[in-house]
Amino acid sequence: MQTIKDQSLTKEQKVEYLLQRQLYWAFGKLKLDTLTQQERERLQTEIDKNRKELLSFEDAEIDNFYRIELYLDEVKKPFRTTYPVEIKLNSIKYSANLRYWSKMDYWDRDQAVILSFGRDPEKLKETQEHQYGDDRSSLLKAIKNLNKLVKTHYHLAERAHPSKYIEFFKEKEIIFPEKLAEYVEKYHPDRFEKKASKPLVKPVYTTPYIELMFQAIQEHRITESNQSKKEFLTEWFLSKSTPQTQISKNKAELMATFIRLPESGIGGNKANKK
View 1 (cartoon, rainbow, N blue to C red):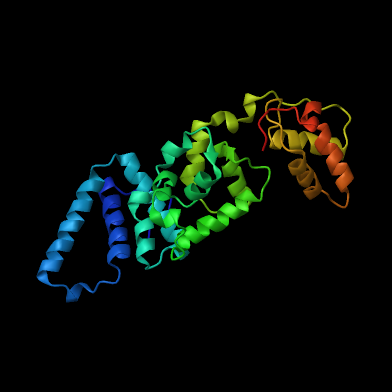
View 2 (view 1 turned 180 degrees about the horizontal axis):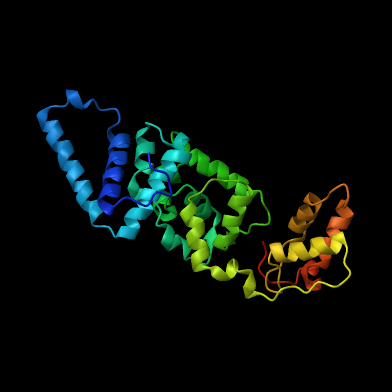
């Protein structure tokens, strides 16, 4: 099977691949040699109808569907089951338009989690299976579990910029469509290009602690309008403790305090927070 990065196929070849995937999941249990002539004709009519519908899509949309199908097939096989509800939720109808979603200024937690599975948040939420938490779907179970994980990380707001969720997925090694990160970076370059902000000028004399504070400011893109939470920064500083540069919780809290604005510690700051 082709890899996710294989872009050598024509639009028609990708359409045929998508048809094969649809047929595999929709008709996987059928024994074609037992079908009557009438059933075969009906099946062929359905195939032709789907082929015509897929060919009507723009090349970019077909490429998007193709990537997601490969992604689901290669790295999220556990969500491919024979349950009717799973067949439904894995159909191309529920694939996300990654380009469209990447242009948004904010995702809520549900949207980010569903997008990580290559599904369309709006379409999936409209299904009865999602609304009633259908326990037959391993996909919905996985979405629910990942949602719980994201919710426990207090540095992520209920609504956050897409780049924040991409960073979170990478940090936690959560699998998601590569194209999603590519599009988010393309449409929000200011969130990724460090040259957009003036480089920090370091003093001639410094210490390991000061170096870490500079690193935190740069890595978390801390500015007057983007202040990370003290608790999150404290945990980050603690994770950088080494035998040579030991960092106690008290030191970590002080360092987290000193790289933030004074008003951030008294509840008056209205800037964006991680």
